[in-house]
Image (cartoon, rainbow, N blue to C red; front, side):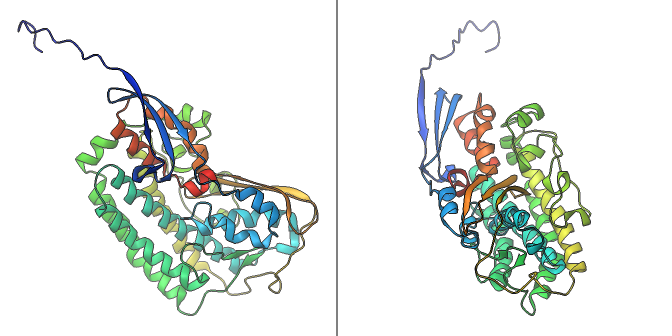
Length: 380
């Protein structure tokens, strides 16, 4: 109140209480629960509660044969089946050595599938971030349209839209069917750039979106490193770390692309980093489709049982959510002796409380959406 009015305004006394959001709640992106301690509308504490979807993935991976485990990796981050296959294949291929040397054509097909999958995941992430911020479903439907076209390509090549089970040790399960490359080139060249431009034009300067996301959910560069944040969450805090550049795998060192970073360290920059990353994925796709050679897709004949020498290996790939790692120990038998997954969705949740303190309950929903978690990967 202005001075001199004679009106004495005192702040309302409030009690702190614990508010449970989830696990059955549309804004927690699956069966995830947050115990918030709030003072009025202000968050003063947050505890993530996980485990509602635990499927014993790693113990099952020690029971399955090495080849049988591919379709189980599909179900980790179930939006990025191809990228999950990629990480697991690289770990076992390290152990197999020259017996699983990937032919050139298969290397290019792997990169094409991985980058298509990254775009599909980021499209979904952007659509549902806007959903969490209150733009109910219209942005999501705009984004999902392109994802559906990409899933059509996956279904055509692998036989399945989401649980693709497409990679194999030393290559891929099937060669690309006739007409697939023409359809893929048309989508990459004619549609994806225009759709990314459209999302950029409709969302990036929207004043309501900026009000809800600028300065919200801050995670400084130092905090992001300390919490081992990964992927767009890390790069939005101005850390230019991308596994495809920092520790190149497959044939990523042949492609010209930039590691996208943001300086705002907030919800807006996490959105914008994903938007710009889609542009870089399109750049990679254009190069891979241009240079795709003829040749075999496996180093030998297709096998339904493989011999993995004793040893241990760790592989990591740049998944859509961040660094996805697979640790495999083999004892010479048909199954892994030890198998462990480092999932970026789980790691990124460790910083959630830090990002939410001092914000309102409504902001917490948007901050969680900006992490782009998938519970199949969080709980495993």
